[in-house]
Image (cartoon, rainbow, N blue to C red):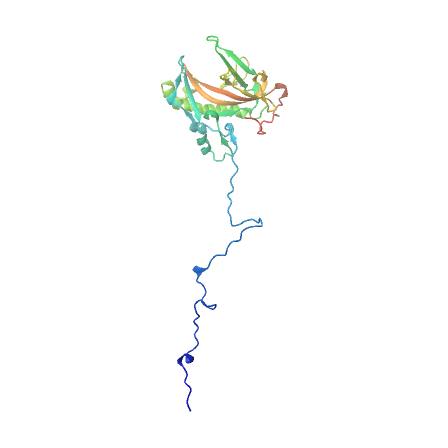
Length: 301
């Protein structure tokens, strides 16, 4: 009997190797996996895959610094005098001009929630409401006939603004103290010799003037004229509506935006000069003791 022959292939164990490309072939490698395609948002639902940058709201801009936030150190660092361009008048008076470095001031006070944009880069501050015993006054020089105009705030206890006393204290003990130190620092160029602080206190005529003829101390502001011969002073009434300079009367009340202008050296004495650029005035019979709204933020300056 013949034994049937068995081929070698039939005797080998079944192979576990799968054919490449067959449905049962090997799976793709991780490098070949493609990310799923993102569907377009066609129904207006939020796209959480996108990033939106939220810009902070812009800071408001003020035309002056808040005097309550200005220290002696701020003034010493930020008031810059141009000693290279001292102007000497025909009468021999030296005019010392300066500017206020607002960028340096804001760097010193990163907590400020506003930006400062000073006109002509000069230091400016707004007074509280205080009495105007002379209104806006004209002066005639008895020698040369030249006219000038001033406005004076009275440092009087009848002031109706609760910031009156702190403001006067700031002027005398912060602002004046800084100016005195600057005079000593620059005395060699301004006066031709180095002086001491005691001497500076004697020769400096500050912003708060001693009262005369029974009047209290005064804060004087110079008012210039424009090219057309009009007083360069913008006035608003108690309702915050632009008014006329002629409406400011004797014994009204006013708050003044004063701009630090320059100092003058005359006959060895240093005089402080300040220009008045804007005024909020209120008639005497409409002023209420400590009741005028000075902090509402609605004033034009």
